[in-house]
Image 1: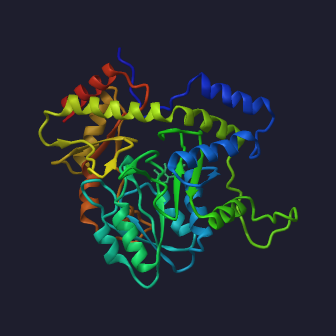
Image 2 (image 1 turned 90 degrees about the vertical axis):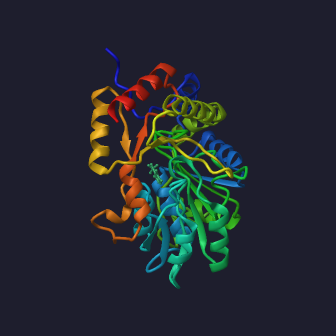
Image 3 (image 1 turned 135 degrees about the horizontal axis):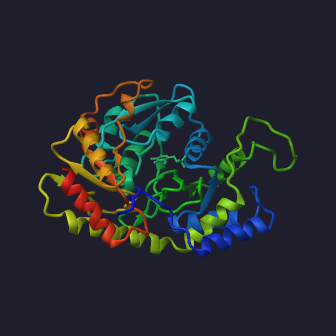
Length: 364
Ligand SMILES: Cc1ncc(COP(=O)(O)O)c(C=O)c1O
């Protein structure tokens, strides 16, 4: 009997176990300790930024970035309609208004032409999402932001190591926000990071992350801050993953090329597309079935499950959520129904990829 193939699984080796054990044995188990500084420095260097600020998860990284930049009541933040809900909720939690724009069907990221049209006198920031591992068109987005004097906050939660013209995501905006949740390309269990080159922003992010406590006077606070810190135990896991990040990224590329080889002759489907100016981080393999609607797609997911393969539907349009404002985003609505993410984890074996692809062929 074949075992059930999950959608994702972290890669934990003796190195991760040794570092976490060391952190726990050292008794530095909260948010001070040698692994925190090291993880922040390693990750910032990897992204090509001067600074990294570790947080408890990727959601609070986004929220902290927004509030630290002073984005709040009545400000508008432009976000893509296709994303995970944290992108949008953090804008609301900051007291601002998310403005949804449609996606480019080729890379599933925000369409810069739609961004330009969505700008109003209240727009303060653009928050592109590098969806499923493909970078948004940061050259175009940064040009628009410069023209209108807007902040760019990259939601890079799904795209560690992806590049645009050789420059890593997280180094294009005023800051970049990452997630290290257990299903991400590197993990700390729960965790997040903000990358930036801006020294003043870096100091203020650290200050607000730690209850906005005065550096000179303990327990003295002149404004309302947050506890968004990462623990030394999480950072220990992160340091071990950073030592393996090239290997982990290479494995994701191999997995994608193996899927491509098995599925290349099937008409009416497509896998992740990559612009020639980008490198893909392949967080998740994306399968799109051109003729499908939501009902057919959900039935396909059920058939895969019966054959022992887990998968996920693409995200729903954020503007379709009952508590959010509807938007005119036809590309997002069309593609959201056609897409399925297939298992994309590091230890996936070649024969398992073949089994998944046979299940796909049988279920179509
Ligand atoms: C696009 C995007 N943004 C933000 C987040 C939030 O990250 P976290 O789950 O670490 O809070 C995720 C998470 O999975 C995500 O996919």
